[in-house]
Length: 280
Image 1 (cartoon, rainbow, N blue to C red):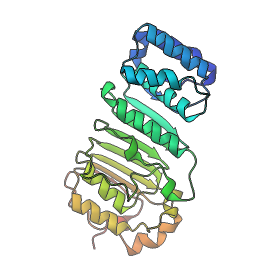
Image 2: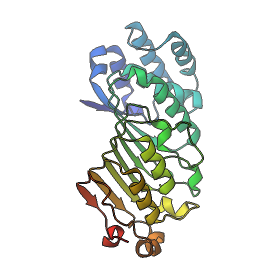
Image 3: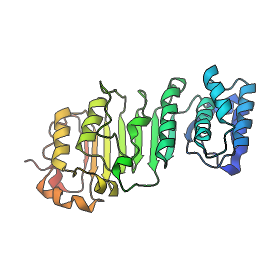
Image 4: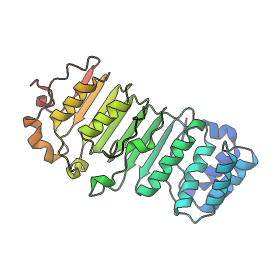
């Protein structure tokens, strides 16, 4: 398995992959975060791949890509081309890592991942890291924007699941089996949304951090328990860690999660305080 990140000092690697269908097929994971790859390097890689017919894209997308590649590095169109070219060149991707920083750019990348997913039949994992935690949680990028129906594993750092006001009707279903969120702001409304969309979820790990201090609604652990008892997910592992958020202390003892005996499949439970699982 090859895991490749292409910084400005390694632009030749992108061109090498463009020129070799075999090497491109070996790449299973990629850091899709835009770095300082020059426009010239992207244009060169595009032309090389095009000559060997190494781009699995429609004529319309090919035309758009050929146009956007000529925009200056760092512009929105350039980000579009950067993401799409990598997705088009690497047909056997299984994992995408993306570091979020600018909301509008993230939205475009999410659009391309969802649009191009049918051409990536092996894509199963998304790893998202938000490197600039905002003071207002409503500006958090959210994981659901990046998901496609076949994604099975998600890792998110300083990122939420879904904004409360963003609801698809009917709710879109996902094949997620493993979710890990750290330094997150997820509350009981988002957990309810997650469990309603992910009936196959088996592993759920949540660690709250400074992001949860900015939410408008307080995080009450008993409401999380209510959601778990309502959906009765087939979780085999559940880990809840609110210890990083000092503002949760009053809720730990006055609002325990309560009994989790409804989770019949549960084999591993990780919580920092016994009171979280005491019965009411």
